[in-house]
Image (cartoon, rainbow, N blue to C red; front, side, top):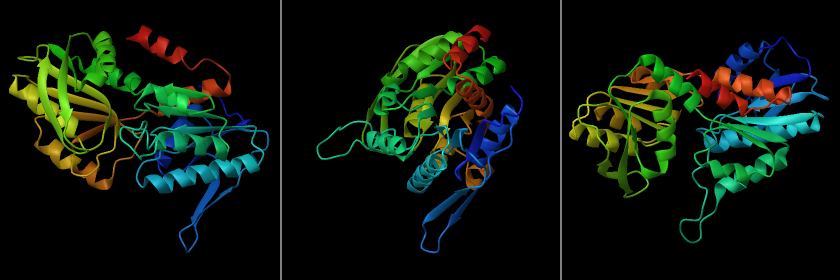
Length: 322
């Protein structure tokens, strides 16, 4: 951590102001002053009240629900800072909406993740700091530098402190094998993989397990819980095959549609997410979800970017501490 630096400013969008405040606490700097207002016709208006000329500026905004509103607000913020002569502008996007629309999987559909990446760069961002973009290749969608963090740094530490014995780390689908392998290397235990088939956008059919889960405690970690179809289907399958306690970890807790209802019914002992997306009041009341903060990780990454130090070294240092 370092003392107040007048050459750096951190601003908060309306999607996740509490996380921005925690980041500023880590950095020991005040949160940047800006007024976000709405015209009677619904248009957003942003006025930055601090002098940012020649300043290294960071705008923290998750593009979570309402996705389009928060995205447009981010774009306006970036344009505002660019026109105010900020020296460098970094879009800090803990959760990047539209990340899953990253390819043409059928005819006559857009690649919206690339569109949004273009919009962010055009609006004035000089670089992007994001957490778990769903697919690492999304970094290539941006024509500006991207620093890509992972919630694994926070989740692994939490589950290691729990000292879960007789552990099997289960990949809920084939595409998540690499992530599951990393958790296995950090936490020990065995590795198992679930073969699944997606029936529709909200329905997942789990099939077979490759690996041993009978009599084992199971940990399933993914980048996102959206409809919870994948994780609940996987939990039911491993429970049928004799698993003991079942833990679930995810970086982004979207909890769309009937996700909470599914999680309540699933044989899951604990669900852990980070605060890249703030939980709704309804979600908080369920008592189902434990939230870990990524504020210190983001704060350290921002410090390193500002000081022109390596961000990737954070991962090596974390591995050495595990």
